[in-house]
Length: 147
View 1 (cartoon, rainbow, N blue to C red):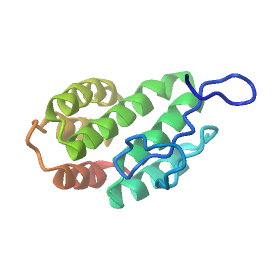
View 2 (cartoon, rainbow, N blue to C red; view 1 turned 180 degrees about the vertical axis):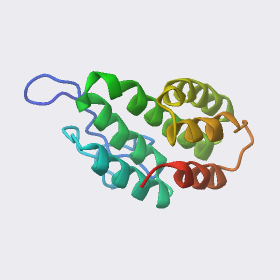
View 3 (tube, one colour; view 1 turned 90 degrees about the vertical axis):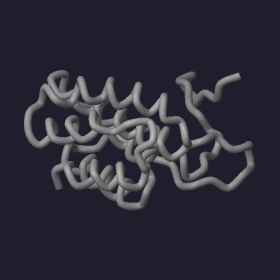
View 4 (cartoon, rainbow, N blue to C red; view 1 turned 135 degrees about the vertical axis):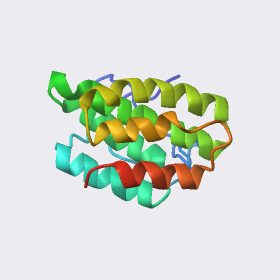
């Protein structure tokens, strides 16, 4: 059964490890991005960059997903694409190269239509393969994200 909040919305109350994998209830996981996180563009970029610097692309994905949910309609594809690229980085960390490529392809298609500097993020992500080193990939995406 899926966790739900007091208003019936789906929520995942299980703790997560540093790679975003669910852990058993009661375990101590890494701090999570709150479900109601609704950042500004500047805050989303700052928080996403901080999580990438810390080697936590799953948390960066949650940050970009938070912005995607509250952004004006013309920006939503950008934030969804950045979130997908970060999930791709998470898959690399977990050793799932095939899953990573799927997410990089989806994310790249979304972010590149927004021009620079996001086009560069997409170009970098589209150059990864299933065997790309996760840390190097995270560093490359981080370097291309605007500050």
